[in-house]
Amino acid sequence: SGKELQEKLQEAEEAQEFREEAFGPVVADIIESAPAAVLANGDADVATTGNCGGDIDSFCVEVMPGEGRLADCLSNQISEEEKGNVDGKK
Image (cartoon, rainbow, N blue to C red; front, side, top):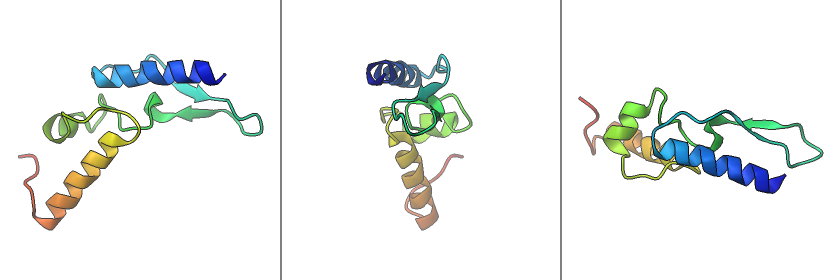
């Protein structure tokens, strides 16, 4: 149901916020005519515990995980580095 999905998404987002692994995959099955979909990281964002964890800690520590905010932050960092406007990790 939609309420169960919201609860699972909230749990996954809280785990990301505290740099913890999500308890398990979040599966959206609220659209009857579509197959169930596993939501990566459960909150539609980059995993704080994955390969990008160090970059998140360096460049996006003030960004609240979820809804693509970390992905946007990292993408902006890369873009600014390519333009020569900011330094990357050393």
